[in-house]
Amino acid sequence: MFSRILVPLDQSALAEQATATAAAIARASKADVGLVLAHEMAPYDGVLAASWRDAKTPEETSYVRSLAEDLAKGAHVTVDGCVATGKPVDVICRRVRELDADLIVMTSHGRTGLSRMWLGSVADGVIREASVPVLMLRPMDETHHPHTDARLFRRILVPLDGSTTSSAILAAAGDMARASGGTLVLARVITPIPSLADSQGISMHRVPIVDDDATEQAVDIARAELADAARTLEREGLRVEADVVVGERVAHELLEMAKAKSADLIAMTTNGRGASRLEGAGARERSGVPRPMRARSDGRRISGRRVVRVLRSTGPRAHHPGASGRRQGGRGRADHDAPARLRYAPLFRHSG
Image (tube, rainbow, N blue to C red; front, side, top):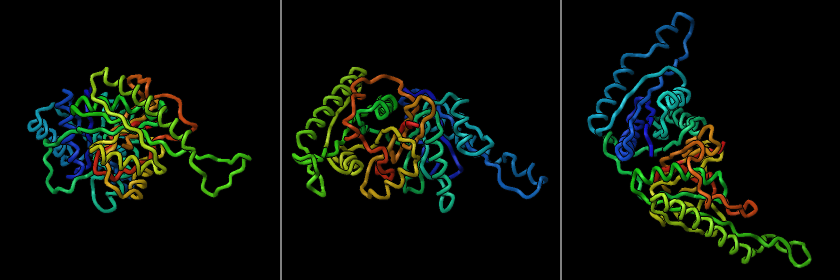
């Protein structure tokens, strides 16, 4: 399971919301928590202003120290904190390496107004650049959020498409399920396979007719692949369910499945297009959906575009043969641009 969890801060109450979930995961995993605040050098006019504008402030140091002490006392976990100078994404990724952290937990937005948009770009950058899984939490509406009181995830939806890229999230999702005592729900959406031509080999319809036999064959193969993956995960002591549905709109079907399965986390591999793309999909798909967790699959860096809470991770830490079967000519692949505006949290792994 996780051994050290990093929580990026920006001195906002919304960013601090991540500390409660991080502490809960840390307690369950017997992990430590690290807090980091980026002191970003402000623009200045002239060389003389540089010395004081670029220096860390006592207020920043005091803020991180106080929050670390409160969290350690209230959550009964080991916590350390630091203020580091640099651009937020660079600071966060550097701190991951320094601490040898294996999970980042952060809220998608921490400030309001234009700064809210700025922090969204930080979350996007972390998802793209970090080398570990990222759990992205959706900000809560409560004005006062306790730092040490958060429930973990009980139903984790894992969209797979038969590729090794999509299955790279399984290791991180499995760790989250162990920490929370939750159930993994493996999901696959098969898009209907059209019959492209009539007996003369020329299409006679503006909208292709669905080839029911080919679609059903794809469904059978997907079910067999998910069953193999489920058996592998069950041998590791995890509770696993699996389901396959047929639908034209993959993102919509995943959202509907998340609601039907009462999922509170979606764990998936990102496709390298950035969290902003995920946010855009969320705007189009207005339905409620779980928070996502994402991870990278290339073994280099993970982009945490991850669930309304998102967890992402670098390369697969374990091989799950059942999840990497052949794909149906590109059909039926899970939509890795599923919405970020979910009722649930997302866990993501970036594929590069």
